[in-house]
Image 1 (cartoon, rainbow, N blue to C red):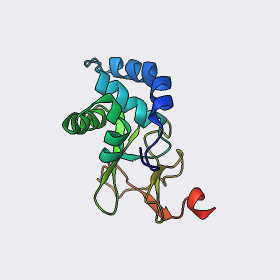
Image 2: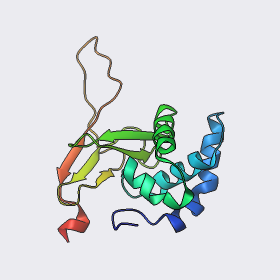
Image 3: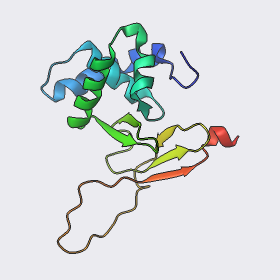
Image 4: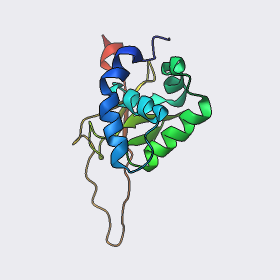
Length: 148
């Protein structure tokens, strides 16, 4: 496991029942892969790339295609959101902790992407007749760990 990969052994087991409950609420099948991936995203302190999810769960023997499909499904069901970084690498985070409308922070040193708390995204007033669906706001700088 790389230094950038979260410690899954302790994290995943703590949130599996909460993840299963969230999955059941969708009315869809609750699978081991869905539970493991949603648990990981819920416990991660930052948004994770597909590769980071795959590496963190390599002992669970979840193949690459399944990881892609589950991440896409979680996003379509509103259980996770997807953020594209400067290199067009998608990163995923569980919905819920920060709320739906929130900003992100990308560290220029370590390249990690963090979800910022609710209320950090500005409210925009749109011109008459415009209907916004999403706002993506990413603040770039140096995270607390890299600044220390």
